[in-house]
Length: 112
Image (cartoon, rainbow, N blue to C red; front, side, top):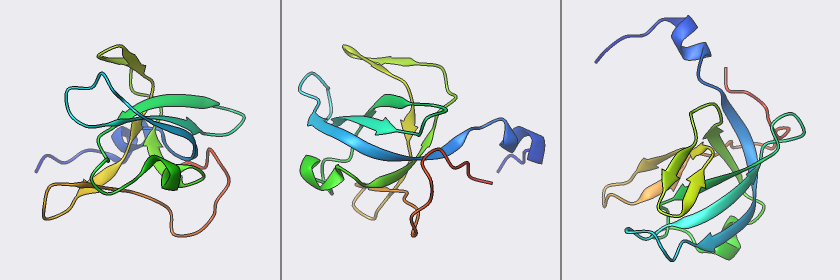
């Protein structure tokens, strides 16, 4: 495993956001949703493609707090320009479980 410095870690903007929209990403090669995530007044709403269809339905994602990286460059995913990376972990079956805070915190709060 490669080690990094604390300064390297601080370069990654990992923030809390709230899912405000979740729709099936029909054009995706692998099953995915297009999420719109509100990261608060400073950052705003960002779009992301998320391959989380095995464990989540779109309606249960609305209002859910998630953890996302907001300072990666935008990435073209088919017809979607993804603006953030919503984080998660693979379970034993390879399905993605979202990384979420276990308490309510203000939108845009940074992981430290």
